[in-house]
Length: 299
Length: 322
Image 1 (cartoon, rainbow over the protein chains, first blue to last red):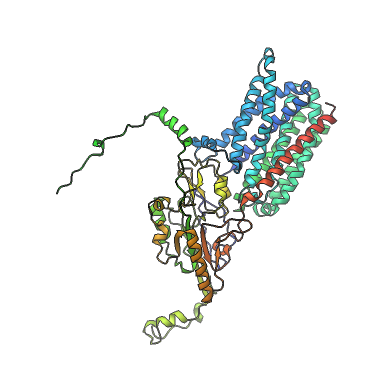
Image 2: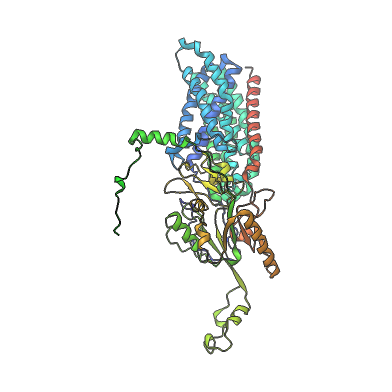
């Protein structure tokens, strides 16, 4: 355990011939609950934009109205996410120092620039999306903004996992599939968000298509999640008790996959489907908290 | 002759920069983006720490704190030998470690009390003390930033605050760091730490200010046994290898250098060590790994998973008849 300065809290211990062997060497960064929320909001924002954009490009007549709202919602989540990122800094008033350099070798620099470049077309798309009907002449601009935003949204979703896995921290350093899981999960979260909006707006064709899509995406996300768990199994076993791990597994598989799948297949009412979409988000949050806690729990 | 005092305010002043809240905000926004040409490159310098001659006096810790004006950490009895510093931190850039490799303590009852005081015995002598059988040893090591040639902390830093300076030392520019903690997360040696006082990351600067003035870093200057040696890195590496040969010749066959040469997974260190036990015993990673070795693969897996999910979404739309 460490204090704010990273100094080891001084518990009485007996000197051993093994010296410092077996003690934690690395310092866990002061990234806590705010980062878990940041991971979730980043996933929802980027995923919602990606899913809305792809759906709108693929079938504009079915998804255009829901997508128009989705961009505004994605922007809202992005603003909250950026606020979490800024307040997590040691010196929030220096947040703009992130833009001093472009450093492809630093995942955080890549993420900063991707988020910046993603926020611009997202803002344009969101602004035009909520304009009254007589502004349809700006639709071409909105489409260009959506297409320009796609790679940066994907980059913003991708960098998070790589940022954590490119580290020396217990658990994270072995998590080769963390980026894979978070990206796949972001798209599933985005689909859940898009389904929620379609339900609220009474878009029946969009709802039907997104129910199937969410079911497939929730299942597909199990692949990188399984690979991630295989990567970090020793760290998980060290960081969490068996009961905690069982609870987490139940939350992931039961609450985050099987229950939503059942609700998506069998759900007849809007509220049941909304619960299914919320389950996906809550399970995603639980997994993100478990990931963020790994170095702290292992120390 | 009486000296004449001159008030500073009476001296000719250069024009003051504008002050006020707006100017402060403007300065905060603009100053970090100003660049100057970097200083001319100088021969790389570093530390060679010979742990076999460290006596655990902690003069290096004290000198470092004094020179760098680092606050005291308070006194906490750790129970771990004489190590009450605990770890390197934002306010402790040197940390002397103590390892007691002693045999099982002899039960008090079995120790026969000497009939006469030891010092009055005719057999007592320094030679006798030096040659009496020993059933253990103390290991001591002054730990510090390793100033890695390929430093993960420097690679991680998104603000450009962490640089290799003209002496090839890893240096945090305190006016640039915004406390994002990427460097803390990346360091495999647990060196860089974010301060709870100012929110910025801190670590050993290898006394950059002293080096620029042609001085030896404070810790090396204070070390009474030359356990901490400072100088041009090539010279230090030669000196260290010679020392290992000398120790081997004298029967200390377990002596070896840690961080002297690059490994398959990590660069050489510009602050390297002579050790006589496993690195882990000294609180060093046995086989440090640069996290950046896996970064490209991680990106490929993340992008691949994202594209697979997008393909699944499109497939679902197609299956749904859209």
